[in-house]
Each structure stands twice: as C-alpha cells, then as structure tokens.
Image 1 (tube, rainbow, N blue to C red):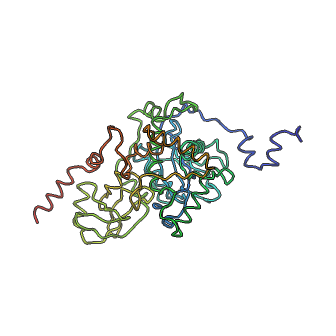
Image 2 (cartoon, rainbow, N blue to C red):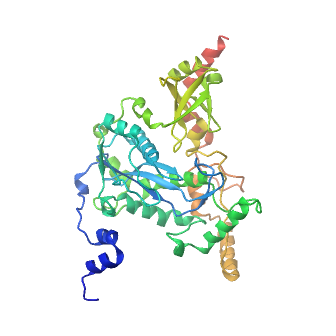
Image 3 (cartoon, rainbow, N blue to C red):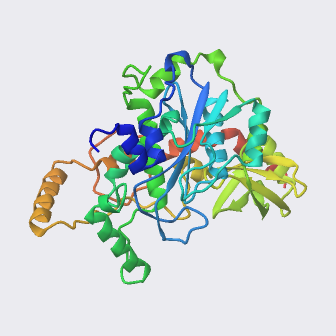
Length: 427
C-alpha cells in the first residue's frame, strides 16, 4: 500500500473532496494584474464561538448560537469591504454585505460567490431577486467559483485567520470540532443551560451584540494594521494596497442612494410620529435629511412602509403604502454604536476557570499581577477601540479618546435641527 501513488490513496480513502482540494491542478491568480474593486469575493463562515442571542431574528432570546459571518473581500488588496452577521446565512445576508461594501467603497466589476452549494448545514444559497436586479443595474458581473475547491476563493483562508486570531480570544471559543473543544467552553455551555432554566442569574456566554461589535472592530484593525504576506501584497496591509492602487478616477460610485434601496428587503408597516419619526426594533428612527423630513412631516399619524436590512440596522427608508419612496431614516443611537442590539451592550464577559485547582490558582495569581500592573485583555482593548458602552470600572490612566457627544454631533447634521425649528415655530 505504501508504494501506491498518494493521489490514489487520497481518492479511495478520503473521498473526492479531499482529492480535489489536495491533488487536482488549479490556476493561480495573477494578483499583480488586478486592481482594487475589480473582483470581490463573497462567502459565509461560521465563528468558532458560542454567544447568547440578543440580536438575531428567528432565534430565541438568550439561546446559545454560533454566529455566521457573510463577508466580501477585495481580491487584489485582501481588504474586507462588506460584512453581515446572522444566525443562519442566506441570500439576504449576501445582499446586506454587498450593500455595505458598495456604500463604503464603490461598485466592483465582478462578484465571485460560491457555486451554489455552501456548507451542508446551510444548503443552497443564491442571489435574491432584489440583489440580482441591483447587480444588473450597476453592471456587476456575477461569477461562481469552482465547486469544492478552496483555492478558487481566497476568502476561505481569511475565515481561517479569523478563527485562529480572533475567535480563540473568547472564553466560549469551541474549536473547529467536538474533539477540539476546550473544557472551558463545555463548562460555559453547561452554566448557560442553568441560566436558561433559572438556576443562575447570569450566563457566561457573551451577548451576540457585544461579539459582533468587537468583531467589527477587529476587522477594521485587520484592514489597517495586518501586514499581508500573500502574492502581490509584499508585506503591506490591505488598506495600504487598496488606497495605493485605486486611483480616485477608477472608483465607480453609485449615482444616487436609491439604486440600493431594493437591498432593504425587510418591510414593516409603521405609524409616523412627531418629527416624522418611526419606531423600529425598539429604536427611534429620524429623517436623515431635510428633504426626507419635509415629506415625512406630512405623513404624521399616517401608516407608512419602513424598509430596512435586519443584518445591518441603523438606516432604513420610508415608502408610502403603494411603495413610492418618501425619505431616508436613521437611528442615531445605532449609527453611533455600530452593530445593533435589542438591549444595551454589556461591558465585558466573565472569564471562567475550569482547570485543576493548582493551575487555576497560578493563573489567578498571574492575573492579579497583570491587573495591578494595569494590563488588560486583548478583548477589552478591542472593545475600548470600538468605543462600546461599558459598565462603570475604576478610572483608567488618562488617554485621548473620541467622546460619544463628538460622534453624535458628527452623525447628526445641524441643519436638521434648523429645519425642525422652522417647521415648529409657526405653530
């Protein structure tokens, strides 16, 4: 048997997929010939972390869930341009990540997606009709990757980086499979079951909203700080390559925001209240500009349709009951915070120790030394840089931070207040 060719053994013992991934030839991409925004690649990846749901629809509140991330990566620069988190990925999360990418970085020429058969747990996923219409209207060419061949989608290796460098930071990290699950994760899931049964006041699992907020910050820092050793990168960060090679005249921007409105796929009927505002997902959405305020002011105490993207809340559009556009809406609290939650984001997670008593005492001693020295975990630093709301802690050493009121001022143009004042002074 040892004398048989290795490809023959792989095919007969490990199956067709392993044979295709490890033995079949494939074409290497000439990254040097590409430019940013020429090709975006999209796929879904599941985090190796258990969280407590306070964010995702279709899943019970506080249920333990491993979040999925739908991401889009720019092939030339390896920059992550679009993201959407969910309990189960779908064509809607593809639409959400695409909208985020286009609004932030412009229009790609080509969009690569899976050949239609994602992970077995997910099933067949394709573009939604709304997304297909947007692709046609913007001149984006959809292409499908080779089936079961990870080399055709460099984004799969990026998901591996996320799991190795970010997921493993969390106490509820579960590893790639049951045999890799740390004892700490098993203990956390058991304690969470006690929490669900009312036997414990708190759960050791982090809220999904907190996890997503921290993940979003980590991706931002990956783009700006991670030296990449891949082909054509030469040790530069994704942001450096993207900004260096994409000239201002090469960026294709959408002419009007309306072209992406079809990607706001969730429609809910709401009554317009004072100031042209509506309530959605427990948050107050305000008119985003003067024109929207003027139109929605005339709809006060009338029902309208509010279209939004549940995977990336914070912005929405208002339509009349016949589907005609009225205006843009914005939830200031969610825009400032970043990812949405249905309850306030909690400050930090409580780390559980499950090792032997001697090791636990040793770790506890080291932790005490680090705390007295002012050292903190990488998760805490990421959350600080994401400017997430935190519980009261002992005052840290003086640092220069962006104040929440500064973010609020930047997100809320002064002219909106002026228009509101003009409308109300005549009453």
